[in-house]
Image (cartoon, rainbow, N blue to C red; front, side):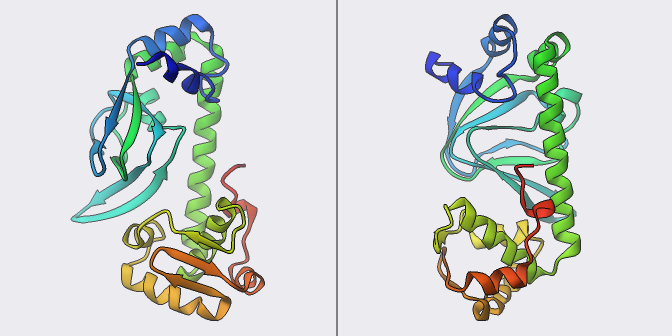
Length: 232
């Protein structure tokens, strides 16, 4: 691990309150690796060998069952995955693969668990991050169970617009096939949902989305902070 990588890790909420000694023990066995796109980093069912930290690029979390596959989430810098499996020494519930060229720090899971037992600041941060992850899962479940496919897409576009600085035009961060999977839809249903949103001011050309009637789209979507605000 290069010395210039250390401050980026240290600044994360997860590691910020650790003692210097324990932080040093944790990163001593870690290393940084750059992966090309579409490299599978973890496989669901395997035990956690490393805690991963995404420094650059992005990583898709996905799951499979009975010949089917679904996109669960996208991890972007600077953040960790999959913390729960690391702490519990349990099998991964999701697989992970790079969506683009990505630079990732790998910290041995056994070192993470040892520091968790000995460092109160780190333990509190782990509990806080796991609580945040749990709340995100609840919000995602509410989105899937309470909204129609058109409403899910409308709210996803509103969230994407906010991430783009409230710009009326922005690029989709997921290719449409993966976006459909993430929203619990087939690609065909996603295409129909985009067409259904045209009267509400949504224009799509390739990966570019333009929202020309924000008020109409918001009236349809009815966004709620208890579902759509993943920062709380």
